[in-house]
Image 1 (spheres, rainbow, N blue to C red):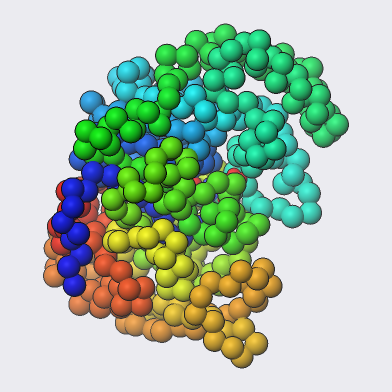
Image 2 (image 1 turned 60 degrees about the vertical axis):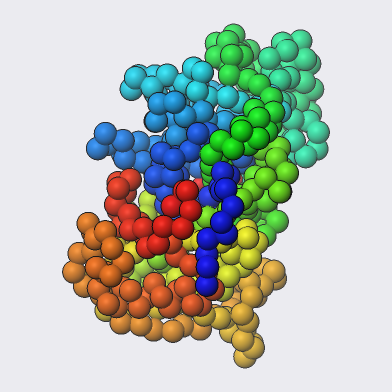
Length: 436
Ligand code: IMP
């Protein structure tokens, strides 16, 4: 089969195919070298991308890691919810490392803001009956305000009189809830105290990013769209209600950045060799045993944003097929294969069982998602360090067989295999386009 479509592939969307934390940060960092422009289109500072820069781990929550390369333009577009306090801190951190964002970071005037009251509301909701296990960054409440048309956009923030009016309207409406944990007047004072510094910082970065993008695409500039979180956390297609409040799927790049679907050339999925999830919610292949513990330790599976230990389990082909279909993924990057090394046997979930019935597609029912059991296929494991290997044929035979079996079960080509956190620790199985 010819995986190369032969067209000029100038736009690429990179998506997570599982519950986030697939290693997108490293993959995006690797691909950013070839990009002219890197676009973050949804989510907020709930994401945490760990990259190794000058031999040190570095976590970015909002600003695309492409900012670490000089001459790349980074965009935070309308679909993102921006906490200006955290964005400011991130920009200052970059500046302290000799990487000022000025002139290289643009922010959409239509992006919505996360203000301190959103974080309190997130906190309050998490004390309620249905605990999602959110990052408590105020993501859900900020998107809720956007949908109910109470939201405050970046452009509204910059027009002080508009901002003050909207702020007061919001605080008045939310006061009965906020009063349970915070003084509303103190909260208002805090917001207004930060206002001069934050608005001065934001003003030169703000523009119509959809227009900037359109111009770049017309000029055939290479544009990389990076998704945050993962497909199974998608508001519409994830394990609802245990999801985030935006659309990480590739289609989210259209609404989240303001480009038409015909402008997307390729979609690359990032998939981990096993499965992890943070927070609450169903997880059919979860391992609450020493193998799960082994994966957590080997993979250093602790949240980059919250430090929470991630739940670990076997690879789930049912969920991957769901992700591949929803995103229109045409090839995959496999990450953390090295973390499976040393396990005697490897299991792949090929279907689920519920009340004696076999299920091959991800069920929408919360009950079935919670109660179904995995159907496993078992394969022999591999031993010996695979770090530093640069060719697919150099991998142990059992590791090769595992990758081939994954490809067969999910019907999609694995083009790249990442074997470590460093940018260069990657096997290009087959070079198929301008990106990989
Ligand atoms: P929220 O996005 O903070 O509202 O959290 C909703 C759910 O998404 C929780 O289960 C979080 O743990 C999860 N989540 C949010 N961001 C990430 C991420 O970047 N990686 C993995 N899980 C995430």
